[in-house]
Length: 270
Image 1 (tube, rainbow, N blue to C red):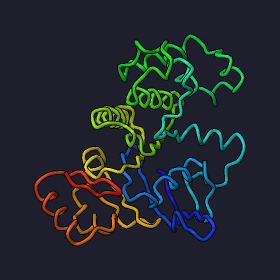
Image 2: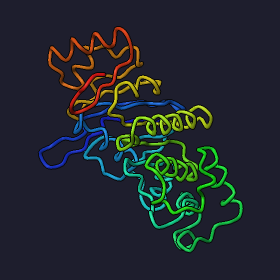
Image 3: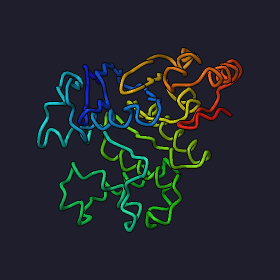
């Protein structure tokens, strides 16, 4: 189980994450929603230790993650793999090598940079790409792929880390709706088939409802909602997104009939 205990991060006078306490069970698919600046991305970076907390602790199965240093910290970042909005692939390298970089902490930096991967590792990478219908693109340069394909390559790379937790920071924000669905389908399949805990920051309310077992809503660095998708009422949406009365009335009309689309910052409902 992953536990955040009073987790806080300040940037000068600004508190980006404010005394957040959460318990995330193993194998859960958790969606985090909120306006830009609500603290969603900072919270994921704190969990992965890409950012240091100003206060509180992160615990995982009895280990104080906030106290880890050196190799133990590198091992944690392998255990809690990160997927970013902008993919973070090496564009000039082929797809297969990008995926194999996920073995970095298992084999050492020099051997990875020199592409000294074993036949077993290469076979594993191909099998992982095949899960996302990308095996045929293994020898293509990453920059020849579409955005949706590149994000799936990034997911495959994360899986080669053999993580326990997958942290996805706005993984579909730069994708069109079709590719966004493909990527979210991939994340949900990993969650279901591999039993990985997935924590996913999302801008779209309908996506969180459609794919996640549990939703956490953040506003001004604090958790203001934590529950099942069905419990996310229009009034709670207003608190999370700071909606006006007119926007709230429209949201209530949508949520009473179907899952709507709520995007930040325009908060357009379709």
